[in-house]
Image 1 (tube, rainbow, N blue to C red):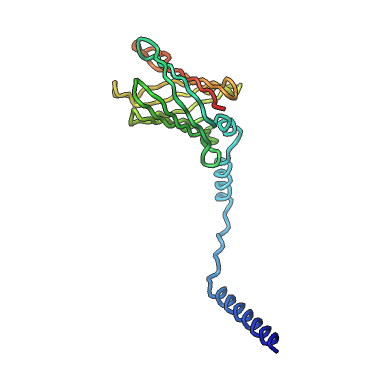
Image 2 (cartoon, rainbow, N blue to C red):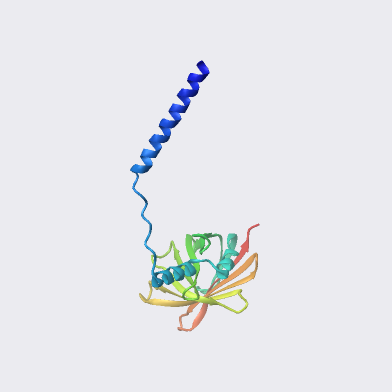
Amino acid sequence: MKNAMVRIVTISLALALAAAAGAQDKAKPEAKKAPPMDPKQQAAMEAWQKASTPGPEHKELAAMAGHWDVTVTSFEGPTPQVTKGKAVRKMIFGGRYLQEDYEGTYMGQPFQGMGLTGYDNVLKKYILFWADSMSTTFMVGDGQMDASGKVLTALMTFSDPVSGKAVKTREVMRREGPDQETFEMYGPGPDGKEMKMMEMTYKRVK
């Protein structure tokens, strides 16, 4: 008798819970379906999806991620100056951009910098940004990879505090191998002609 009563109570409770859940479902407003897109909207969405999808160029950037020891040679003074630094690179936003965080010294002072490198699927070129602790300006530019896929040449622009004007530089990044890279920056010298301003050698920390 006791078991029968327990079974009846259990069934009654289950029915009550089911009824309550059904009442709640009916009380909820029906989700509105998005209106169908016309051909123009559909084409626009497909274009955006294609442009936002990482491709082989982004995979090449991903190969540059990791921890690096950096040797910096500056040619701006009467004699070359050599300093040391460290760089940490990682891919962000789902493999779309390579972010670099750099720490070292420059002219005897602590120096920090951050760079972003990406490949614009629409413009078909690499886009580069750089900011550091010794300026309030951005270096911004774009470039192309050579046929070998190992040498990236970019033209950059930044605000020069001495002249008060925008200055253009040329940057060349060479992948010597999976564990070593070379970065060179060229800009106008005292005579106005292009000169090498800086060279950085990256060696992967294993």
